[in-house]
Length: 430
Image (cartoon, rainbow, N blue to C red; front, side):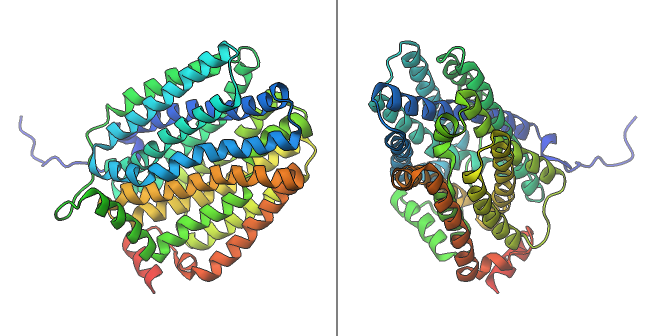
């Protein structure tokens, strides 16, 4: 019998009701699990090689950790314009799969060298640079996929769920990797390689995604320049991106965690895994809450307060000599950082036209990577001059100062009160 009522298409109430998003989420989780395990252990191995094989002091080995961050940043800096353009010109699934494939090869080589006990500082720096090159293509492509597979109204929730994938994997990856590493040093890298291959294949099952193009396509160099000019002219975007760049660049205690694990708290690789997992645990808890109850009002002010709190907690971590207290502080740092990341990511994606999302995401990714990798370099240099504790205190205080300056110089950030795209544009332009 024919139906008497016309069928209607029901809008999804959650991003997880969308099949493409579910596959995207799982691919993101597996990729982050693998890379976080690999990168955390890479830092620990480099510090151990510098101390044991090269006979370096704590300060000298800490400086090598800073150079490791620099090795990852150089390819990011050089390739970011190309990566953003690739995400806007080609199928974003293919770009992400290519990046995961490169990272998978890095994991395979690292596993083999670890198994053969053939690691040295030049090889570790080379692998770190290759990992940085893979990340520069993965970031903008993966960030630009989510707005294309979920409705705009669900994007903040999709970003929160994506952060759960990221942060949960960031908890599990270092913790599991550290436990396995203590028993078979090559095995966690081999597992990372397998997970990266699975992530690469899974992202290819998402429907084809290309950026929407308005008008004739510009030549590649002009497209790169267009993205940079757009961010420079939009003070709101510039403020969001540079706030993270300078605050985290100064307050990045992550690079010095091997020093705290080995020579200050005396907890070894297992403790390092837990220390690297603690911020992600705090962030994942907040991301889970935000996926059900996203922030609605006064989002700009809350972002600024979250960055300032991150700096204050960084100072507290520097003075802790209790492993349990240090874990609690690191978890709190992850929680407040998640608030900042959630707000900033949502604002940047909603404020940016789709045809520029790849390039803007690549610039934002460069700022994040600069804050992380150059932050590691800054931490290593500062530790060589001030010691590990002094370097962390200096960075935390610097993050608080940066927040105060940005709140004054970019009033657009304070004026951002909601995630409604049209309302947001009106607020920051007044």
